[in-house]
Length: 385
Image (cartoon, rainbow, N blue to C red; front, side, top):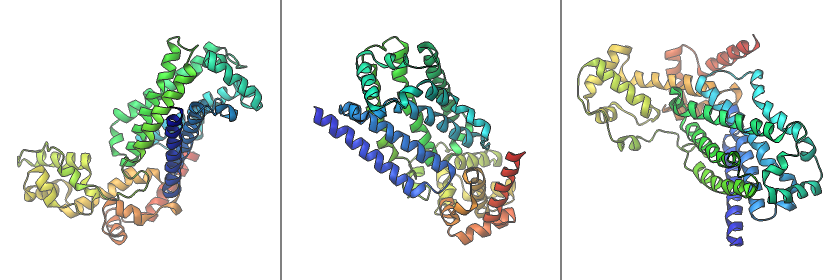
């Protein structure tokens, strides 16, 4: 049994480490968002490593992992919240948002003597925690009583989880996120929910015996699920899926069965279909594909688009791609030099970067690079006001 646990936990740690390295190699330099996600993946790796050491009975050989899980949670949770907040509201982050890390600072100050104590002291604390649970270490703080520390620990956690859940599942802008961000944030949210279990157990009064074990067992199962899930998020690790999968849209049970020729109804159906499935991000998307999925004549679709937007179908699709760039890609850009416009053009569904430049200039009367520079300059001016 011990060998199976060792094999399972070490495999998860190895897989998590590989995931971290792959993500950093392919994505770290793309934007500040990717850098933040890289940091979160590193925290997960450290957390999973500490779980492996505990369940394999090697934690006493690495006593400085004591309280590491709590430190990574207090750093990672505000980062997840700020990332979701930033992308949901399209608001720029400001130095004042540093107040989200006040619980982390208070936690470090409260356990300063323990965090920076020698290995022997930490080993003794771990042995006591085996018998008495986390209640033992909570009593060793220098600033707060156990009840005060419980509030400092629980209230921010519940608040952040509730806020993140609201922004993910109730805020309308979340569906506009790139698929890789949608997938990552959803997995992060379910991971946070799973980690509420040890806190709930503690709140119900089962702190004394076994809480140290419960926290690590929960960590084991959440580790396995979240690590495997990373490989199923579209475009997350390798960014291989540059185009929208039109076959997956065709396989969706259609809700557009009416052939009503009323142009107001028709244009609503077109806009709803575009917003939900974003087929325009595929270079293979065509009027025939839309005609087939909406079960409406392409002639009527083109006429309705022409009447509302004064654009033919081809220009309408290119306009959608430019608008998608402005609403989704642009807010994630922090440096013009780091932007690979050729990759972006491909991901938006353009046949080439030259086509991207031509269409961009047609609708915005400037180049993508100049537009990005102007955007970055304006946001910098706003932040400095």
